[in-house]
Amino acid sequence: MRGWHAVSGERQDLYLQRLAFALLVGGGAHTLVCWLILQWGFFRGGDAAFAALFLLIWGGHLALLGFAGLRFNRRLEDPSMTEPLMVWSTAALLLSVAFVEELRLAVMTFFFAILHQGVFRVRRRRVARAAASAVAGYALVLLHLQLNGALPRPVAEWSQWLLFALITLAMVLLASEISSIRLRLRERNRQLSDLLERIQDLAIRDELTGLYARRHAMELLDKACRQSRRGGFLLAVAFVDLDHFKRINDRHGHQFGDRVLVRFAELTHRYLGEKDIVARLGGEEFLLVMPVIDLAQARDSVTGLLDALRAQRFMAAPALEVTASVGLTVAGQNETPDQVMARADHLLYRAKAGGRDRVMTAGPP
Ligand SMILES: Nc1nc2c(ncn2[C@@H]2O[C@H](COP(=O)(O)OP(=O)(O)OP(=O)(O)O)[C@@H](O)[C@H]2O)c(=O)[nH]1
Image (cartoon, rainbow, N blue to C red; front, side, top):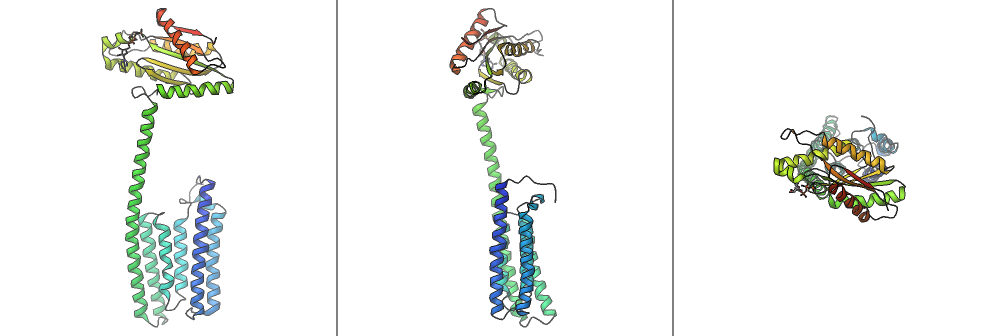
């Protein structure tokens, strides 16, 4: 046992259902078959032995069920309790076959139902161990009876045991095959979900900077505008354009230009809040969407970011100072994202026209 495992209510209900089905239906069928055997006169000890044995077995069944019903199963490494259920059911079977005469194999066939429980849920090795225990347990019962002179037809009994052992072996081999298919499927599923995650990432993120790509940014902006209207907070929208980027590319190479773009993206993580949305709209143009108290707060954030950008130093171009121009505004109550974007774009144009390296701001009309 370890700590409590996080098992959802739904999952716990499923475990309980499975356990109840196996113990009540499986246990009921086992009891019925043994009762028929008792009626046909093949149950050693008669009614009294039958009653005592099945009182014990049902006590065990109900204890297991109660254990899970009280949610103690959540403390187990495997809260489904598949292995304890297999061990207990096999023990109950072996106990009953010790009392059955001649029709033991009929009772032992219940073991295949127990094995079937484990094939899809526990590891191959554990299934093989359960099978070996059942075969060995069956042999021990026969040996015990034989040594006590209670096995009148030993050849027939041991032949039935051999048959049981062979069928069990065949089932274990089948279980092993099913188990390896299960493992391969699980691995394939893992690869597929990794791939899906990558595809989703490629669809929403810009490959170079890891920032959101334009299309996804527009969806986020639309959502943020609606939330801002409902939540009563202001939404600042900024268009950022790195200055003379073509010149940087021309002087220092395209790869160096890429490094500048990545550096800017890194700075946005450091200088903007967790709730802020940063996207690369294309080339050297970025979009910032920030929930703010007022335009002044947004301006402070953007100015801090531009100062940090200007202070960056690059090994390949130590004298280079990268600057940016920004058009910054806040969304009006009934404005559409397109209207806010158009204003931010116009402000950016004015920042460029005014000599670059500056933030132009305006509130909603
Ligand atoms: N390194 C690099 N360059 C890019 C990328 N995407 C676009 N560019 C370049 O960015 C440059 C943008 O040039 P312009 O639109 O003239 O802008 P600018 O030189 O910054 O001029 P202003 O914005 O007016 O200051 C072009 O040379 C593009 O080739 C990219 O992913 N990596």
